Length: 131
Image 1 (tube, rainbow, N blue to C red):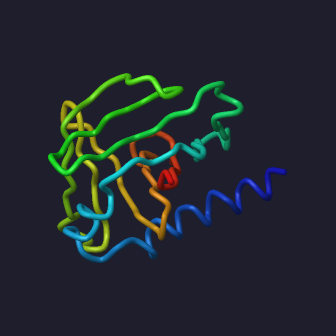
Image 2: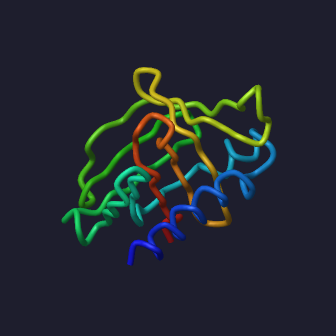
Protein backbone atom coordinates (compact mmCIF):
# COMPACT_ATOMS: atom_id res chain seq x y z
CA UNK A 1 0.00 0.00 0.00
CA UNK A 2 2.73 2.48 0.96
CA UNK A 3 4.62 1.54 -2.20
CA UNK A 4 1.64 2.48 -4.38
CA UNK A 5 1.14 5.73 -2.46
CA UNK A 6 4.80 6.63 -2.86
CA UNK A 7 4.57 5.91 -6.61
CA UNK A 8 1.47 8.13 -6.83
CA UNK A 9 3.20 11.02 -5.03
CA UNK A 10 6.32 10.73 -7.20
CA UNK A 11 4.18 10.62 -10.35
CA UNK A 12 2.25 13.68 -9.17
CA UNK A 13 5.46 15.66 -8.60
CA UNK A 14 6.96 14.61 -11.92
CA UNK A 15 3.76 15.55 -13.71
CA UNK A 16 3.71 18.95 -12.06
CA UNK A 17 7.28 19.74 -13.07
CA UNK A 18 7.34 18.41 -16.63
CA UNK A 19 3.82 18.63 -18.01
CA UNK A 20 2.71 22.16 -17.20
CA UNK A 21 1.59 24.60 -19.85
CA UNK A 22 4.50 26.68 -21.14
CA UNK A 23 2.83 30.08 -21.55
CA UNK A 24 1.60 31.99 -18.47
CA UNK A 25 -1.09 33.74 -20.54
CA UNK A 26 -2.28 30.34 -21.73
CA UNK A 27 -2.49 29.15 -18.14
CA UNK A 28 -4.31 32.35 -17.18
CA UNK A 29 -6.90 31.65 -19.86
CA UNK A 30 -7.12 27.88 -19.39
CA UNK A 31 -7.71 28.11 -15.65
CA UNK A 32 -10.96 30.04 -16.14
CA UNK A 33 -13.96 27.92 -15.12
CA UNK A 34 -15.02 25.51 -12.40
CA UNK A 35 -12.83 22.75 -10.99
CA UNK A 36 -14.03 19.77 -8.89
CA UNK A 37 -11.79 18.58 -6.06
CA UNK A 38 -10.52 15.01 -6.64
CA UNK A 39 -8.06 14.55 -3.77
CA UNK A 40 -5.31 16.04 -1.66
CA UNK A 41 -2.13 14.22 -0.66
CA UNK A 42 0.21 15.18 2.15
CA UNK A 43 3.70 14.41 0.82
CA UNK A 44 5.04 14.23 4.37
CA UNK A 45 2.55 11.76 5.83
CA UNK A 46 1.17 10.13 2.70
CA UNK A 47 -2.37 10.79 3.95
CA UNK A 48 -4.87 11.07 1.11
CA UNK A 49 -8.15 12.91 1.49
CA UNK A 50 -10.96 13.15 -1.04
CA UNK A 51 -14.66 14.05 -1.02
CA UNK A 52 -15.60 10.60 0.30
CA UNK A 53 -13.12 10.60 3.21
CA UNK A 54 -13.56 14.31 4.02
CA UNK A 55 -17.35 14.20 3.85
CA UNK A 56 -17.73 17.17 1.53
CA UNK A 57 -17.24 18.15 -2.09
CA UNK A 58 -15.34 21.27 -3.10
CA UNK A 59 -15.41 23.36 -6.26
CA UNK A 60 -13.02 26.17 -7.16
CA UNK A 61 -14.24 28.69 -9.72
CA UNK A 62 -11.76 31.00 -11.45
CA UNK A 63 -13.35 33.98 -13.21
CA UNK A 64 -12.12 36.17 -16.06
CA UNK A 65 -12.04 39.20 -13.75
CA UNK A 66 -9.52 37.58 -11.36
CA UNK A 67 -11.85 36.21 -8.67
CA UNK A 68 -11.47 32.79 -7.10
CA UNK A 69 -14.65 31.41 -5.54
CA UNK A 70 -14.80 28.37 -3.28
CA UNK A 71 -17.89 26.19 -2.86
CA UNK A 72 -18.37 23.30 -0.41
CA UNK A 73 -21.25 20.93 -1.05
CA UNK A 74 -22.46 23.44 -3.67
CA UNK A 75 -22.66 26.21 -1.04
CA UNK A 76 -20.65 29.39 -1.62
CA UNK A 77 -17.93 29.73 1.05
CA UNK A 78 -15.61 32.57 0.04
CA UNK A 79 -14.31 34.74 -2.77
CA UNK A 80 -10.86 36.29 -3.18
CA UNK A 81 -8.70 37.85 -5.87
CA UNK A 82 -6.09 35.75 -7.63
CA UNK A 83 -3.27 36.13 -10.14
CA UNK A 84 -0.78 33.81 -11.81
CA UNK A 85 2.94 34.54 -11.75
CA UNK A 86 5.73 32.90 -13.70
CA UNK A 87 8.70 31.70 -11.65
CA UNK A 88 11.63 33.89 -12.75
CA UNK A 89 14.15 31.16 -11.84
CA UNK A 90 12.28 28.49 -13.81
CA UNK A 91 10.06 29.76 -16.64
CA UNK A 92 8.15 26.46 -16.77
CA UNK A 93 6.79 26.86 -13.23
CA UNK A 94 3.93 29.09 -12.14
CA UNK A 95 2.46 30.28 -8.86
CA UNK A 96 -1.14 30.98 -8.04
CA UNK A 97 -1.29 34.02 -5.75
CA UNK A 98 -4.57 34.42 -3.90
CA UNK A 99 -6.14 35.93 -0.80
CA UNK A 100 -3.67 37.77 1.41
CA UNK A 101 -0.65 36.99 -0.80
CA UNK A 102 -0.87 33.22 -0.29
CA UNK A 103 1.02 31.23 -2.92
CA UNK A 104 0.87 27.73 -4.31
CA UNK A 105 2.55 26.17 -7.30
CA UNK A 106 0.10 25.55 -10.11
CA UNK A 107 0.07 23.15 -13.02
CA UNK A 108 -2.46 22.33 -15.72
CA UNK A 109 -2.31 18.89 -17.30
CA UNK A 110 -5.11 18.38 -19.84
CA UNK A 111 -8.32 18.73 -17.78
CA UNK A 112 -6.55 18.45 -14.42
CA UNK A 113 -5.47 21.30 -12.18
CA UNK A 114 -2.76 20.56 -9.62
CA UNK A 115 -2.16 22.93 -6.71
CA UNK A 116 1.13 22.06 -5.04
CA UNK A 117 1.69 23.57 -1.59
CA UNK A 118 4.20 20.90 -0.52
CA UNK A 119 7.06 23.39 -0.47
CA UNK A 120 5.34 25.12 2.50
CA UNK A 121 4.29 21.86 4.22
CA UNK A 122 0.89 21.86 2.52
CA UNK A 123 -0.85 19.26 0.41
CA UNK A 124 -0.78 18.55 -3.29
CA UNK A 125 -4.39 18.89 -4.42
CA UNK A 126 -5.85 17.70 -7.70
CA UNK A 127 -8.99 19.06 -9.36
CA UNK A 128 -10.69 18.17 -12.63
CA UNK A 129 -12.56 20.58 -14.85
CA UNK A 130 -16.30 20.56 -14.14
CA UNK A 131 -18.46 19.35 -16.99
